Length: 88
Figure (cartoon, helix red, strand yellow):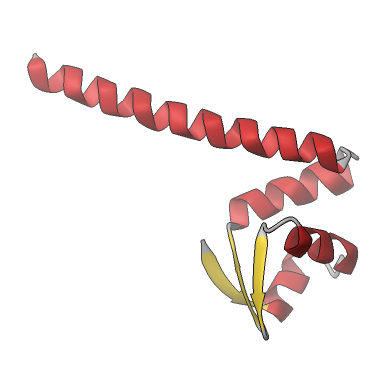
């Protein structure tokens, strides 16, 4: 998670206030005054899904969950491979 000014988030999302409101409502962006906390990669993924691919919000939620699960699986595989390498 990274911290940015609200103005930077607005630039990142090309002024899409509707999307910013949705991201805050869904908990993907935490806003405190003029500072926001967010995962840039996830926000950019959501922007692409929402605007470019016209994925509806329920689909975005599923894709985000699957992406999180995939990242966790990749980390676990890397741990297991490292452990296996140590034994050899």
